[in-house]
Image (cartoon, rainbow, N blue to C red; front, top):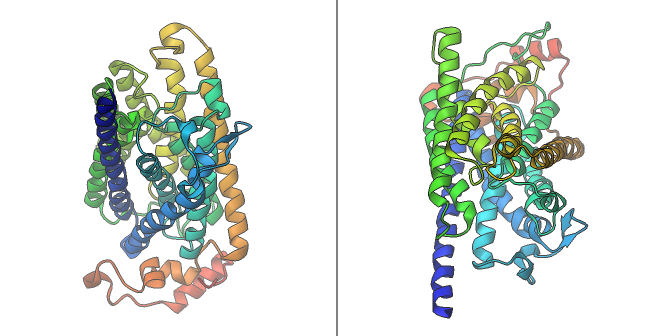
Length: 434
């Protein structure tokens, strides 16, 4: 029996480490996706933010975040042990080494902060972003994550179901992205005085598409890996419903734009696939294949509507993070209460799970927004969160990193002092140092 347990533990460890690596590889997808959606003069800047997510996010989660999220519970609100992976973690009841479990959860933490990076692209101070990354991965994400996934978290005790994080990761971080986008303000020239929006063309849609395929690949580790068990009987169904929902999200977004405008929009198709993935992340282990199709398709349409709502609210989100992750993540978490084969309102007629899912989703989304707004207000007292007008017009690649992404196109870009002066006069902005 001990030999069988040893073999099972070894298989589970390999499974968790491999799927954690798949999730970490998603950071390459975030980098490509976001670089493709922003302008060429900010390509390096957005990729450097993803490096910040990886290096500072991992360190902050190791030192503080993991303990707050998975440490011994206090009042259903916070973990109090396991900082730096120290002390006993027997309360977690793991069948794998704590190090493997930490690795998997660190990948989730990095994914959460990466959602915010795209929403503040092209105008957030790099130093301020480093500070916010530490706060997000050390405190904001772990605290609400504890409520859902921690031992005796208050939402866990109510019975909330969020298998791989539509609420814990995506809705929380999506509404954190909304608060961050509001705090740093819109890019210069995005909105007119009457509130109408000007399109700012992305630099490279094919690059964004490749990033989407990388994220798509990694998502199978994201969802199926959350079993933490290599022999779980539902790994196949989790992976299949994940694929069906993502395909349905991409299809609904593509067809919606095709019939509405006569052209299949590539950016909305990209985000439609991601919306389907986000929407099914909570319920991939709890809903049927057909329900997964419905959830994914509705997620694709909701993403398009939400993108319009965000823009009409005069919030500048270059990559659509708020719509894809915030609104669609919230929908996906609540959809578990509708479609779950056990306890779903539409499948069993019971309202209990639906109420718990709605309460939990609102709680973590509100937490993400308020905590981020407060954190950035504090950080702004230490380091200005908004770049200067001159830096923004020049591009953050040259302003913050001293090089251009495409030298044959950008080597001769000058700084236009008269243009800087004109924009400052029109906007009342002051040049703020980095």
